[in-house]
Image 1 (cartoon, rainbow, N blue to C red):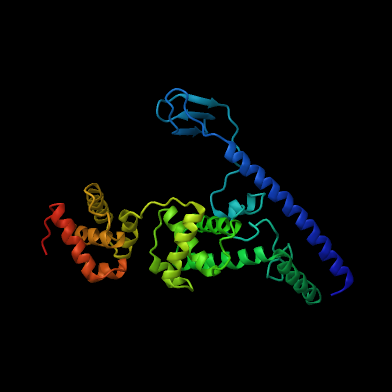
Image 2: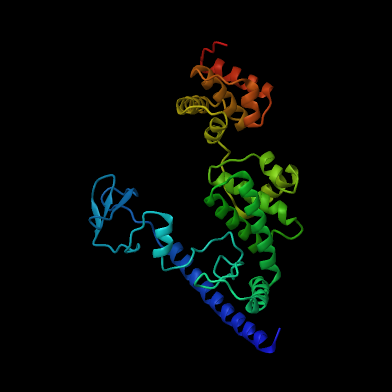
Length: 338
């Protein structure tokens, strides 16, 4: 690499560091304003159920109908888009900030395709220079040990979330939990994979998209025991107040895996709601109770599934389903014709 190229890269690195520091300061200011901001309530009835009517530019209380604010500014785009291509063409800003990338997506990325901004192929004469720039760009993005740790952990989080088919909000929540653990120095003495898996498990419970420890352990590179131990540690140190997982959260996924109709799913949810009111679900595994309710509902709805089929989807044994469905049928007075 020539001296001029090295000097250009140094200047580029300095500018990007300055830009990154300014962006970090703006993010901190925005977070501080968000903390200081108090939620608007209706002065008439005290309700927090407020609706923005964008046609009339009014803020209306959904409970009593009082117009709290009017003539407010619509901060959305002035253009409309009817598909993804139109939205990408008309948008004049970059990608949104994300916690799933170690630099929050604030730095630039040199594309791997050898094309210029007009889509024309880059000549072979300039490809070697572009290759060197791309290599140095990758090195510049990860500048210290903390960013290197985050880059590896967040890529591991993304891999596990993709294998489990988790939505975007769960990935963002897991990344925030892991970043909080790094800020409080909870990673020292523990494997990165273990803390990442524990953060993903905590995020699943926070977002009501539950996955069992066995499912997390299947896609991670650590054991179920280590994930559970690490999860208990970070939840205690970070003050994560998570309620026990409800069996109802598992019903949509299990019914989808068994190809059951919506009526069967609704009936299973109702059975679990009645069981919860009578405290029949406390002290029992949520997956086993959910599987038993789905088994009962499939029989009552005329779409019977065997105990083995339900057990394979729920990840429990047939004995567990048999014991739980007998308890539910007896306590809730449900007649099951086998």
